Amino acid sequence: MPVNPASAPKSPERSAVRVLLRLWPYVRPVRGRWLGAAVVAVVASCLSLVIPLVLKWMVDGPVAERDPGGVWRGALYLLLLGVAEALLFGFRRWLVARPLSAVEAGMRADLYRRLQRLPIAFHDRWASGQLLSRGTTDLMLVRMFLAFPLTFLLVNGVTILAGYVLLIAQDWSLGLVLLTPVLPLVIVCSMFETRYGTVARRAQDQVGDLTTVVEESVLGIRIVKGFGRHRSQAESFRALSERLRGTELVKARLLAMIWAVITVVPELAIGAALVLGTVQVADGDLSAGTLVAFLSTALALRWPVESIGFLLAMSQEAATATERYFEVMDAEEEPDTASPTASTEDGPGGVRFEGVTFRYPDAPDDAPPVLDGVDLHIRPGETLALVGGTGSGKTTLTALVPRLHEATGGRILLDGEDIALMERARLRTLVSMAFEEPTLFSASVGENVLMGAGETAAEPELERALGVAQADGFVGRLPEGSATQVGEQGLSLSGGQRQRLALARAVVGRPRFLILDDPLSALDVHTEARVEAALREVLRETTALVVAHRPSTVMLADRVALLSRGRIAAVGTHQELLRSSQEYAWLMSGENQEKR
Ligand SMILES: Nc1ncnc2c1ncn2[C@@H]1O[C@H](COP(=O)(O)OP(=O)(O)OP(=O)(O)O)[C@@H](O)[C@H]1O
Image (cartoon, rainbow, N blue to C red; front, side, top):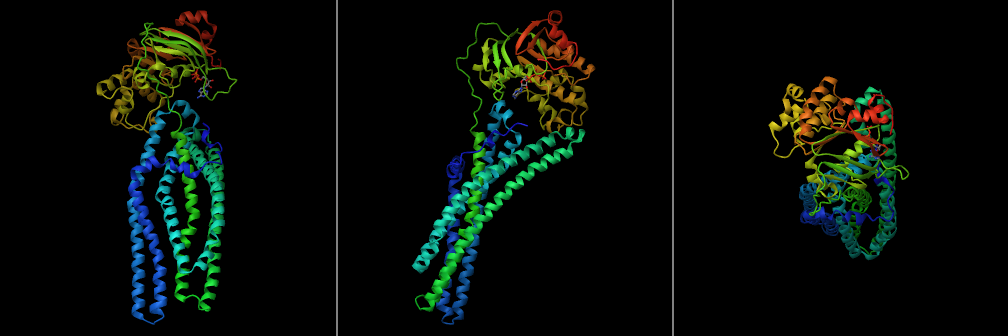
């Protein structure tokens, strides 16, 4: 399983605000609606502060004067204020729901586009679950942050400020009593934020790990069942989810702690103000109505103050989600080194490898390069078979031609043109590939095959490609022919059928250069013979490099190159190499040993 390079501990200096500010380009198009919604929420929240003033008027007025009509009028005002508050909060929700889901969708689309453009080396390093969780749960957290905590931190801030002004205006000495918890609360909140941010990050990374395990178990369900590994898989899943549960419990404990502090400390201050206020009323220094209004205002501020704990928690989670999102968005894309002056040299055509070296970026420092000065020339129109022991670097060498990996040294020329200077999109229209492990997508057979051709390719090309790959027979027998949908990764087809469709995809666009990585390994001998016969026709029109493990595949080629210890050890016809190279003879003899 690829590691998660992102789970390295982050600097404790990271500022949640700075991280969240990176969302601005996405929020900017909806800023008007968001601000409108925030203003509506501020008005709604401040309406709740008018309620104590109505109460004061009722207590000091109609209640004191025993005026039932005035009391009913006061009750009606309270009802109207409550209804207006509820309607405004509903309106706020309506204002932001649609634009914020558009922000989430836009960010997700950008992430997907980015993932498509990131180099294979990136995908080798990153576990798929980590990427999936960034595109799902993390973006959901960001949307929730924009819809709720971001608005309510502002709304509650304004409400608390307005409330304090009212409190001080009603009685400044009691107001000061309620101000005493502010400083300790600010200190506790900032300590909480740092701690919660670290734990939230851990939890989100663990969700990514869990997603990876679920994905692997589902994709590898045949292996899991076939080897009776469901119990051990369940064990490792349980271990991971226990780990996540532990982290979630730490989060819950932190949240409970901050909630308790934020609830208890202001309550103590309100209690003290109540005692002091009652003494003042008894001494005749304060009216009963003012005390009622003061305490009602203080109680109306309880929710805005108490909710700050979980609003901060949600903001921290959104900050970690944003950080995780931008870790992918900031990853370096494949540089497109297309040079307007890309030269077509007068050198020989075909494919030429000149001193090509390659080492994987994550290989240990002391490991020798996989390819170490490969020199090879495939003449125009020629088919060259590449033979080598297991792990000798055949697949790696073929992946360098369409620049799935970049050669770390030397150069590769296609018809005299250095591929490092070619635009990738153009390079990939010239070079087509079929891999040993055929990957199909959840689409129809036809769509899967036509993926290998230009936009304009249609039925005749499809028919021809299916014919070459000897796939027309079984495709014709599928319920809806080439319109039949194949399941995820083509799992509803046999290995040989998938391999033939992958081969059809490679040849459908009549590529100038064709790379086949042991494309016939899953076929029975009869089908293999038929595919080879048809393939010979295709190979006649193109320049091809075919990775071969078996003599029958080698026979497709005009010449054979032997890859050994990272270099081309010998080139010649099959017969020549059988005579001149012991290693080649041994590889072709069918003995199956690991050798490099
Ligand atoms: N993504 C990767 N990161 C690091 N090392 C890799 C990676 N992929 C392959 N390797 C290493 O590079 C070497 C060559 O692998 P490669 O797949 O090219 O061999 P191969 O000749 O095609 O083998 P086979 O015949 O078994 O398919 C191996 O030692 C392998 O472990």
